[in-house]
Amino acid sequence: MLDKIKQIGLHGVIYAIGSIAQSAVSFFLIPVFTKHFTTEIFGTFSFIDLFSLVIGSVFYLGITSALPRSYFDYECSEKRKGVFSTGFSLIVMGAFAQVLLVYLFKSTLSLLIFKTPEYGEHLFYISISSALNFLNQYFYSFARLLRKSIQVSLLSIFGMILNFSTTYYLLVYKDIGLWAPIYSRLGTFLLILVFFIFIYREHFRIIFDKTEAKLMLKYGFPTVLSSLAGMSIDWSDRFFINEFLTISDVGIYSLGYKLGSVINIVLIAPFIQIWNPMMVEYRKKEGVKELFSTITLSYFILGTYLCTALSAFIMLAGPYIVKGGSFLPALKFAPIIGLGILINGSVNIFCAGLIFERKVGYIAKSYNILCIINIALNFFLVRNFGVWGAVGSSVLTYCIGPAMIWHYGKRYFSFNIDWKKIITALGLSGLANLALINLYNIQSLKESVIFFTLILVGLGATFFIFLLSKNEKDKVFKFIKSKI
Image (cartoon, rainbow, N blue to C red; front, side, top):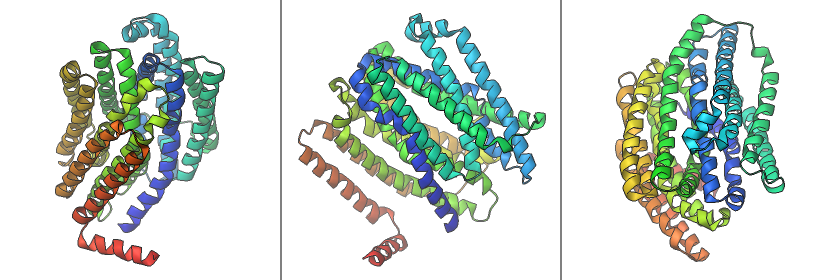
C-alpha cells in the first residue's frame, strides 16, 4: 500500500506542476485584466467563460470520464486502442455538434444571457475554443492512463506560456478587449490538439466499436447530467447576483471565486488526475479499502492546511496582484470559497462505489438535486445578503454534495473513515479562514505577515498535536532527527 501512496504522491507532484500550468494563466492575467477591464467588462467575460464551460460539459458527451473505466476493462493492447479510437470518434462528433448549434443560435443565446445580440460572435468563437479544449482534455486523460505525467506537465507549461503571452500581447498592445483571451485560447488549444494527434497517431485505429460506444455513452450520459448540474451551480450564483445586484458585482464575485479556486489547481486537480484512473485500476487489489481510508484522511488534513496557507497568501499578496481598486473587495470572499471547493473535491473519493459498478446515474441524480437546492439558496440568500449570500450558497452546496454521493456510493463500496479527525481539521481550518478575512482590514504589511505566520504555525501545531497518532508523530520526529 505504501508503494501505491508513494506513486500517487510522485505522479501527483508532477501533475500538480501541469495542473498549475494549465490553470495558472488565468491567475497570471489577473493583474492585466483588473488593470485593463472594468468590473462590468470582467463580469461580462465571466459569463462568456461560464458559457464555454457549460456547453463543453454537455457536448463532450461524458467520453473523457468514460475512457478510463472502459480502457481498464481490457488487457489486450489492440482492444485498448480500439476503445481509445471509438471514444475519440464520439467526442469529435460532440465537438462538431456544439460548434454548429452555437453558430445557428448565437444571436438568440446572446439575447438570453446578456439581453443584447452584441456578444453573439464572442459566444460562437468561445464555443470553438471550448470544443478544442475538451478534445485536448480527452488526450490529457489518455496520457494519464499511460502514466505520461512528465509529458502532460511539459505540454501544459507550453500551453500556459503561449496562452499568457498571446493574451497579454492582444490585450495590452492591440487593445482588442474581450477578444484577446478568446483568440488566444483558440490558437493555443488548436496547436496543442495538432501536437496530441501527431504524438499519439500510432494509437488510432480505423474502427468504431458500436458495443463499446454504447457502453461509453451509457456511462457518459449521467456524467454529462452531473457536469451540467455542476456547471449550473456555478452559473446560478452569478445569474442571481446579476439579477438582484449588478454586473459589476458579478465581476467582483467572479474574481473572488477565481482566487478561492486556487486550491483546485494546486491540490484537487492533480490529485484527481492521478487518483481517478488509479482507483479504477486497483479496485480489485488486496488492501484497497485501507488505501482509501488513508487517502481520504490525508486529503482532508493536507487539504485544509494547504487551503488555509493559500488563503493567507491571497489575502497578503492580493492588494499587489489586483491592480484595479474596485476589485479589492473580492479578496475577502476567497478564503471561505476555497474551503468549500476543497470539501467538494472529496466527491472524487466518495464516488468510488458508483464508478466501480457503473452506477453513475446516482451521481447525476445527486447533482440535479444539488442544482435545485443551490438555485433555491441563491434566490433567498443573494436577495437578502448580497454577494455574501452567493458565497454561503456555494459553500453549503459544496458540503451537501459529498454527503449525498457517499450516501449512495457506500452501498457498493465502503471503507472506514475517521470522521472525528476530518471534522476537526475542517473546523479548525474554517476558523482560521474566517480569521484571515481580517487581513483585508490590516493596512500594515508587517502586521499582516505576523498575523499570517501566527495562524499557519498555530494551525500546524494544532494539527500535529490532535490529528496525528503517536506512531505518526514518532515518524515525524525520526525524520527530523535524520535531517539534523
